[in-house]
Each structure stands twice: as structure tokens, then as C-alpha cells.
Image (cartoon, rainbow over all chains, first blue to last red; front, top):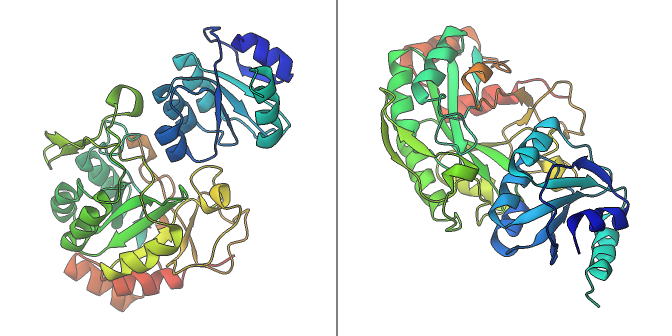
Length: 111
Length: 241
């Protein structure tokens, strides 16, 4: 499924929309960046509440092309700037990590 | 005395290459800071040049680091001598996961001397979380003669409130806040601010007044250093929420 289709289906707010619209194969859900760095190998999407620019730096290391910020967390400008520079999409949802992970799990055809 | 206990140098991956220990110390001295700490992420490797520069510029040095606990809470660990800081730094290095730094993506980690010359770089990524929990860091730092101050407790990233949801009790000498009065429950701990400088223009932006009486000030100035016990007791006199 393309990133743009995932974003549409999740009904998220697009915060940073300049990205390469590639296929999303999977996702990783975590709020510890060290865990993401160590374990999210080519994750595709990252579901998290860590809304700051370090999340973008870590995302680029493990081939995350879409960051989904949960619980309507405020997103600082410098995070958006960093993501634009790296071509990483950022979207935001009012839902929590459990609900978002469940929806994406179904969307990507995991059962 | 005007103090600032939270400053990075070019050794921190997120620190500007322009913020060498030389630039930090000269800028701080120019801004009237009398007690200054260098606190790079998970390392004290730029403290040797920092020590020489503080002595040349008549600034009282505090040697430290901003450690990242397993929970990704940032905690300032402060020491009164270079030797204690370096032995602490060695211990911390052994607790870093062996993830290599990627300077392109994460930033440079360079060790520089007092003349701004690059002497080396750290290969392991210094922004990682240590194999050390928040409950362990205080007692361990104390074994090395240090005191600990949880950093920017009111910030929405890498703080006790962002990672745990609350200020957790512990052997904290004080808590560092970005803004005072604090917006979070600080449980009656003494409160300070710190510049958390990553760029030269950040130096001195949130220094604080360390309450020392005349006698103590005289002692600190004469010695050109501050004993960790005195720093701890002065911190205890700082305002509480």
C-alpha cells in the first residue's frame, strides 16, 4: 500500500507532506528512540508519541518514511523542517498507539 | 555567583561544530558566568581542554556530562575534578550500545584541544540510551564522587515528564527547568535553569544565580574550583516551587 493511501485510510492530519510516495511494507510502534534504532529494521512507518526532531534523525537510520504521531501531540517546527529535508512524511492522529497500530496492521494485510 | 551547569560542545552529535570548548568558555566568561559546566551527551572527553580553558579565563569549572538513562531521561552528572569526571566517563562508555555514529545523519562527535584543533572523534553514537536505569544513575554517580540533576524536567522530550509522565523521586541535587516557575510538579526539589547550549548563541541564555555566601565565594574564587559538597549544599538553597 502506498504511503498516501495509508494516510487517507487512517484519516490523519498531514503535517509534513513532502515525501516520496513509496510502498509501505510494515511498521514499528515504540516511544523509546533507542529501541527504534536497535530493533526497527526497515520499518516503513513509525507509530509514536515522541514528537521532536530526534525522532526524524532516528527514522532516517532505519528507513522509516512515515512518522505517525499519536494522541494529537503538538509537533515543533524544527521537527517538521528536519522531516522535510529528509523527505520523511509526518502525520498526526487523535488516536493512541494501540488503535493506530491495529488499523495499520489491518490495512497492510497482516491478520 | 552566576552559574551555568548545562552546556554542550562540538563533541555532542547535536552540538554545533562551532561550539568548541574554547568558544564556550570565552563566551561564558564574556557573559559574566563564573561557574561553568561542560555536559556533553554521555561523555566527558572534551573536559581536558575545557579544564585548561577555564583556568586561563578565570572561570570555575564543573566537569560533567548529560547522561541518557535507559528510559531516555537526560540527567546531568557533575564532578569537581577532571579525574573523577574522566573515570565516570570511562564507566559510562562501557554502558553505551555499540551503535556507530553516522555523522551525516546524526552529527559530528569531535574531540578538540584548547586551541580549537580536532584531536579525534568518538565512533560510537553518543546519543544512545545507556544500559543504566534512572534509579541506578544517582547512586552510581555518587560512587564516583558526583552529584546528579535531572535535566529540563519540564521539556516534552528526553525528560522525566516526557518519558515517565512525572518527576520521580531520587537523590537529585536539584532539578533543571527550562522555565521558572515550573509547569510540572517538582516535589519540593530545589530548582535551577541551564542554558543547554548547543550553539554559540545559546551560551548564557538561561544561567542562574548559585547562592553562595561571601565566605564561600571567596573560597571558590581563591581556589578556582568548587568542591562538590559545597556545590550540592548551595544547590539545596536554590528556590523551590
